[in-house]
Length: 267
Image (cartoon, rainbow, N blue to C red; front, top):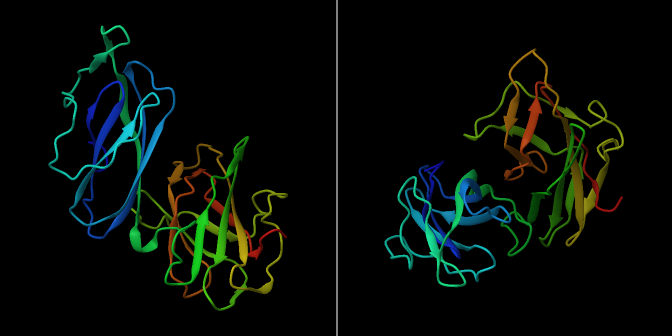
C-alpha cells in the first residue's frame, strides 16, 4: 500500500485498486499507476480520481489495460472477476492462442489528495463561492517552470480583482513550507513568462475569466536540501474561499516562487 492506495488485482485487461482515506476530512484523491518493471510493460501510465471520499472510507475502482473497456467502480467487499495478486507474483492471463501470457506489471507511482471542500473546479456545477479556480498542466524548459492559475466567475455578481492571488506552498502532508519565499511578480525568477504585468484593478463579469501565473526554477546547489512541494493553497482575493491546486513545485534549493498579478483572460 502507498499513501492509502493498494492494487487489489490485475490481469491482462483490467486493474483493480482500492483507495482508503486515512485522514479526518473528505478528500479528492488522484492516483498515478505505472509499470513495475516486471511482466509486460504498460504502454502508458494510468491515472484515476476518486472524489469526496469520506474519512475512514474505502472505495474500489477499475481501470482498463491495453485498450480494454472501462469497468464500473466496485463497493468495498464486492468480489472482483479475476484473481487477487499475491505479493511478488506476476499474474498471467490467456493470450490470443489460449496460452498463458504475463499481465502488465503495475505499481502505484504517485498519490495526491486535496480536501474536497478546497478542490479546484474546472467544470461541472458552480462552487458555492461563485468562482472557479484551477491550475493548468504548466510548461517546463531547462529548469524553468511555468504553471497558469485560472479563474472563472460562474456566479451572478461581478468579481473585483485588485492585485495578486494569495498563494501558500504546502508539502505532501498539506503543511506550510516556511522556507519558501512567495514573491509578487515573476520577473525576479524569469522574464517573458506572462507573470511580469503590474497589478491592476478590474472586474470580472459573470461568465468572465482571469489568469495568474506561478513561476519557479528547479535549480540545485549545495546550500540546502531541495524542496519538493506538491500543493499550493490559493485565495483569489483576501478572505476568499481557499482552493488547493497541485502544481508539483520542484523548487530545488532556490527557495523562491513568483506569482503573477491577476489579468483578464486573453490579455
